[in-house]
Length: 121
Image 1 (spheres, rainbow, N blue to C red):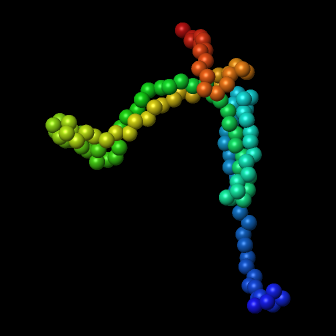
Image 2 (tube, helix red, strand yellow):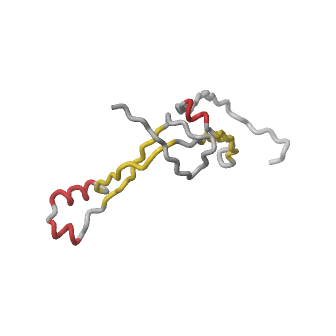
Image 3 (cartoon, one colour):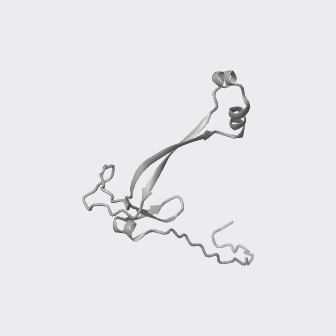
């Protein structure tokens, strides 16, 4: 086939689809926000990234059996069996995030800041 040859083409009807992404961000978070526009070479488009810092502290540790079989073993297996074959567990460290706490302007990432909080009696 040469470059000048005509190729028959069928007509195809396409639908137009509309997409949206939405994320709620508080005014306090926007005060310290860094907005970046990154080029996505794989998806041939743009990627918008919003980053901010938020006050928080480590909370309690939550642990539970890794799957339903581990939960059955934990509940019904004898103690000597569990000592020899312990139950596999998943452990998460919860964080308490405080988005409404205003951070000082000089604060940088990975800093530990102590805040005094008045609690109502």
